[in-house]
Length: 279
Image (cartoon, rainbow, N blue to C red; front, side, top):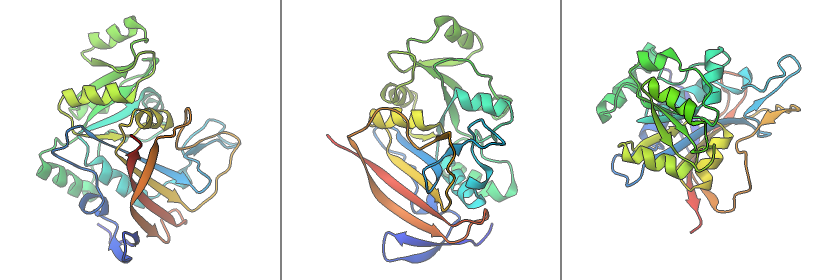
């Protein structure tokens, strides 16, 4: 394990701290006794708000290699380690099957991450969290690592999706969570369904539309953002949030950590927030 140091800017007073375990020990989101599942999301973005972009060489919108860093990935995994259930989406499953994105459905099987497995074991968590795949099209392949890792997998869909496609997934032994009146998955019924099944720590690794669904239904509790000190531009891009305007969600800063130089050559800020909803 490295001894990378960060500058903690908030809460005050400022002080240096180690990067490893900062989200597990001080600014994490894991809770055992909450009445509803604690729901957390995490994104990495450029200063101009890009989480994905296109280039002349690669016109398809994608996560730029230079936006990520090993420091951000370590903290992403610390948040991942606190989950008993992940929420992803069909588009990610398609991209994963086409090798366009890396596999983040499990913690990596590598010596430098064994401490995360040990932490999960101490909390009484399974080696890997279970997984929900949200989809309106129900058209995606399952990645073989889900079965290999023993992760229970659900399909979340709206009631307006094709019943025949839902039955096809059920015939393969997967449970369908109907969470929405139309085709799209809605946040409140999905989290309610997970609560009924005993989940208490739900980590959102989906995109800006699913983030919007959670915020709209006041289901997101913790928001983590890694802000890389670079500008990406691009004619086509994705930002943190997509959907109709929201007027009821504010954010309370819980922590602000400064990394002067990351392994991608840029500095970055790691911020965590609690979601505050108007009544």
